[in-house]
Image (cartoon, rainbow, N blue to C red; front, side):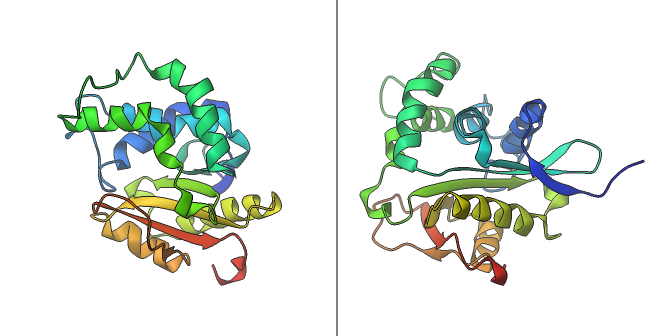
Length: 211
């Protein structure tokens, strides 16, 4: 008998599903496969390192049959996570996505550059928002309240660790995602030196009753 969809902690057997979700939502919320020669660079950069390095802050939406159809992952301390990414994660995947020899010339090279430069995550202007997160759901599971549940779960877990605030970076082109984050109480963080194609949002980990 099937159970109802529910949020639960990440399990190691969810890894393939998380990779797939990431690939299918990585291009401004849409499927990245038509746009990249090797879209596995996305989960290797934005999903897998989190469940590898900080599994206690990884949660999935289970469809009621044991299959993950959405996830949220986070890092409680971005500076520490960056160091661990460089030392313990990058050696595992660097050969799979070689660093471009010069300035990135293709979409794949742009993503590989991000993978090989985790220090880009350390931004002094974000010190007041020490944690960061990534959240993705398959399209057919969006707009049904599950993203809110995932977000509440991660924010509560961060609050339990006495992490005061969290940030995220998103592409400006992903307007549905921006509307979701606005509803979740995220606000634009001004003065962050980033490319015009992205925006940085943040919020405290408290005041969850409004979500």
